[in-house]
Image (cartoon, rainbow, N blue to C red; front, side, top):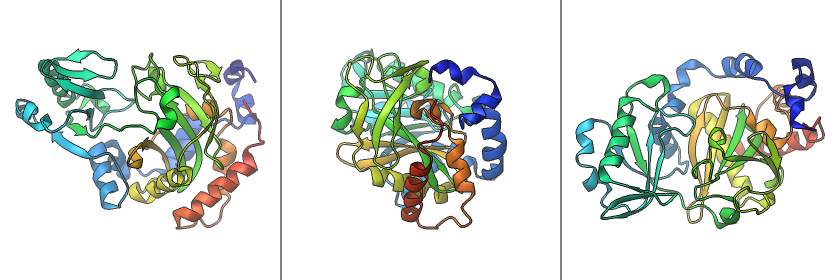
Length: 325
């Protein structure tokens, strides 16, 4: 169906199985996510520490900048690292993330080749500390961590940055996933609001099924021209297991889990979101509701992530023939 169908009245959207924002907030986020657990996901440093304690693989943390006086020592802190990522602990939507792919005497080089001087990097961290990118504008801390070297399977369909895989996990069961591919417009970031591509994924096989870029359904990457269909994501079952296991990590029933595939380290959990967006439905050309309702009908959710992944694939097969957008 054409994109315009997404603008039809609410009754039509329900017929398509689409989950709207109000229903997401009322029937799933408020119902299944207790607010007392939000700090576990809204603070990326806290999430990372919890994951490490639970044995969940995450990008290595190089340093934490908590106060302005530490910025003066940044050269010493960064001396061992030629590549790294700087991000706000309380940021959202990809805002405030600075990716450095190389260094020289002149400064730090971004993904797009632009050179940042030491003072510009210092200023960026100062902005993070001031709360420029944080939820609610509150003072923040800056995390400096390992820059992921993405799996070569994505080499022809990612512009400079690192693709990631967003999975909606409901009651510990992965219900829908998409691959997010950076573009020139997104400045190498895997964020749909900044111009990245959302690509649907077959939950049973881990193969991509076409995608959406802004308001257009697409089959090829706009920068490279390479097809985004039928890509086979390596270690798909491990990705689902990692996503399913994050439910116990943060005690939230409705979450979005972001995972990257490193060429050497395999799947790494980037972050967990307590309010995941709804564009994943557009990327998959199917609504979330049939899958969420299928989970709600299960009388006893298995405690084992392995069993929950089996359920995820079964639910996908049962609902994949439901109304397609």
